[in-house]
Image (cartoon, rainbow, N blue to C red; front, side, top):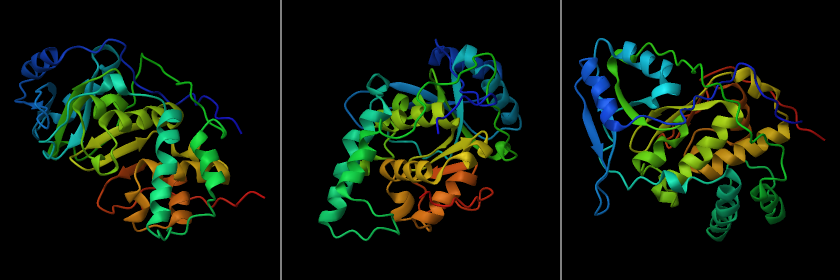
Length: 293
């Protein structure tokens, strides 16, 4: 089946995000103290984002930034203060999901096979099947974004008054890892731009928005879980493989095997990655998907 536009799925986008200096002026106007994140893992030094500490009015700031994102381009995410080592920003290197999976799928599995990898209950994956998956265009996919620049996705969070915020000037939420030079996927040689490449595709297709980012962890929020429940078994197999190639730890170090992870995707409003084994399970309703024949 084809992915159709979801009327209630909105991908926030800001064609011309304002500058970091304008962000700091806004924070000063709101009477928030802030720190500037500076890249430091190379000889270069770039100011890329601002962080603010927990504050009684942080929920108000969060809501303001979300509501004005299409105009200002300041995307807020939860953080824990661990983003103290960053590579150079590389948003110009954000590519396409087709390129990402074509480049990374076969090398990942070939390395697994060479090391005698025991797959966590994966379906049978021959080299031919994996190559077909890596080609990306061979499976059903929607690549045209559904965007409404007049409204923004509102993230409800009752714990905002105890969290820090990372605020980054970006055209879209998915660009944050590339813009700050996020190092969290370096074990797999994925740059911030590589991570943002996949996030852009999931943002367009599933309304998956970045809502939390730490040194080695990220969370994506799914705005309408019911739309995932209508995916076929084969489509969910492909989406589970996308999760795995993007973040092998999600299955290699997680608590779920492939079949249960597949079902979890269809019912969870939260996709956690690089989370030290945090399970996607337990965040929503699960749907049983009968395998197609």
